[in-house]
Image (cartoon, rainbow, N blue to C red; front, side):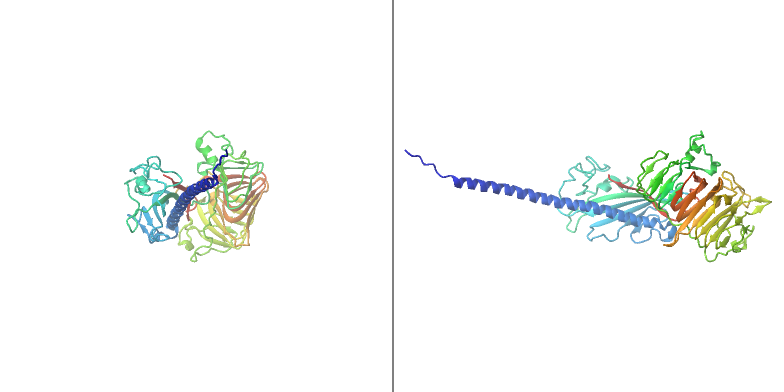
Length: 532
């Protein structure tokens, strides 16, 4: 008898189609979920970045105000958006008057505190908060535990236990006020985030940065500072430091030969700052720190300090060379300068300070002797300004007691054996009025300031050795290529465009020069983001 089996092909097709439909629904749901989460995440990441941009914008505005300390102090912290309980001492608060993007999408607030002084000049602390609105769905559940006052960022913190370092979104509470209060930990409290026109809480992201602005003390922060390349010291050369206020230079101190710790500390600040990646370190010893802007130092065998290859170096413009129009020059181009005790061109004052120093004008400076004022046949501290509308050449004699600032537009070509600075490190004379001088530095007595040339013109400083020469001077020539050849013994400091030294050139930075000139501007000494 025959048995017939029913045809079941149609059932298999239905099962397959049902399976595909279910998988498609699952896939679509997953894709939609992922797309939604991606959109939310991208908006939160975008807000995170925008908040930092807003914080930096507020910090830039505040930093611009601090720089008015020297350029326009009467208008400092007086513009739109600034307020202070005491405009003379601060703190000063800036609130962005018009949000970026409208509807409070991007805001910045900044607080500036005057927290200390350097040589009588204010230092500022800038705290800037940037806040960006976060649009879209309220996802990630950052506020999954109640906020509490005084808790810093972290587990069960002011913003809830769901916090993470990557995604900081305030859905309900402003964690900055709960964590910082007024910025210094006072009046901490739980505060809701702002509401929109419909009374709905608006999620936001906030980031805070802190800057420290300090005055720029010239000539530099170490022995040699360049905006361009550095080459040296030679095989028998050395770069170190000393402080002439404590006595003359001792070559054994840097190597540990002096047991007094204060002298040893003074010997290890022969810092070299190179503002480019072109740094050639030879086999000469550097007793100090080395900073470059992108160089790769493969060996630090001869560097007795720290090395940092990621430090931007800015060489700031020097003080103006041209004196005020009312300034009257003495006799032009005298072969010998001996200022009078009571100078009518200086208001009848003695040349006892830079403010009362007489001015002399030269087309080229060569074969010149500079003398101080004498009282009872004894040299006294005397101050002299010289403007050179050309080059500086050899045979310069600065006798003991003469303080001279030389401003020049051309080049300097000096045979060091023909350069004489009669002042002695570690010793001091009397001022013209009979009081004791505080100037113990031979290098401080002779200061060169080069006017940066206009491109394509260049400026060069050439120091050539002859015998065993010594030169004590400050060189502030930010637009010049500085070249030292031979066995020159240099004392002082150099700020230049590029520096080249070969042979056994020795450079001894006098730390007494660190605060030689009044600051002209501010710089950012510290930048941090507070991630609490």
